[in-house]
Length: 583
Image (cartoon, rainbow, N blue to C red; front, top):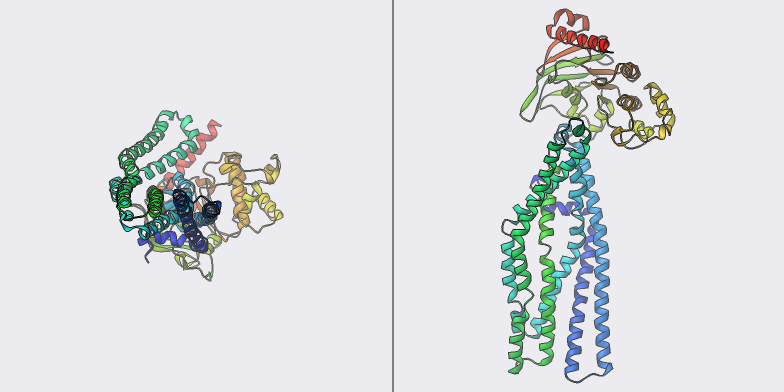
């Protein structure tokens, strides 16, 4: 089946494969509970019949009372055990969904991920998936029980008297008509509620994450207005949903349980005319009282079914997004030269690289410079396999990157950007991300090479100090050096520096440059830089302009031959001189 064509049931079946046994046993237990749930009704009707006939001997009443109690207790126990198993299944399904989403994100192009606000991914992984827990845990066993109980009762009613059985159902079609009115445009209205809630969650995360920038630039009012608008839309969507749903719901709730309006007159008439005995009439009345209630309980899952459908389809849309289709088998790489062959790439509708061709020699330093928006960082991310070329190919050791397993490509390339993320773990574990099997001694040697060992030891708990959320407990320069230590520990043959010193102050820049020299020794190095003074020693410099190579050569060659490089160099020298004067 084409994944994009999968329906909600098929997706749930796929997610539920690890716990099919739990779900099956939950349904079986719920069915047994439904059968046991009929026993008290039958026993009580017999007790009342005996009392009406004057047969009040304990030997007649007590066994029936005990049978009713045992039926109730058995139904309660079976339902409880069924719910326990369905909860275990639901938690397994939720874990499977979350693993599927995170695995999907790992296979998706980084551009797709970066184009989506982080709040939406948080909402998807935490809030959206969590909404499935209660419906999945309760709907499977309870919907089974609440459907089977009225069916079994109705069969018993037909065995007692088919006429009363039919009249007991007279209110059901009317109630169902009310529910049909409630379902008009239900899917669209409920989808609006879910969308509004998702947007509100995303706006909330964005507002909280950006609170420092908001306050710094005095954008409190505008930013709060955006958040308030999302909250207002959420409230309005829910109000609209309730307003157009509740009238029909209340009408259905009032009409459907009123089956005695037909059962009592018809039953009385049949009894008066001798067409039904008292025992059967009493049993019919008691069964009719319990006939519609579980059916109403089942219909109450309308919201849950709609929510499950919308939620699973939303998850499905993410799982169906285009991903990087890489092979699994490791390939042989004769060398670690990087080459672009007629590569084109676009963001949405805008093409940023146009038939680009160049190569970065193994073991050499290649620099890529150019004005903002010329495509420098796009090149770095294509090399790091964050994206894939639309046409042409990027090769590593002469092999098309698309034919190299993603794990192998990631191991071969270390990518260090200007803003490397640190996890809310110890500094030791953040460095160990470069090589999860590294010993503490190897971690510390990498830190020494990255010139961050001394400042780590000065922290309150040394290497066991928590880095904070995103590395918030450390300065920008300290975070950068830890990221470089992580890359040193990874020890990849290709290193991509994407403006790694862009935001460093002069003091930190010198330290970071020293750290980088340890990282790149003997490696194929590609440097994306706007501080041209850091790449004057490069073996080859490619000057980009509007997604194409405008010039290439050494620093001295480009100063002599490339007007664009001369302009970039003069702008850099002017900025540097101005900064030194201000200092």
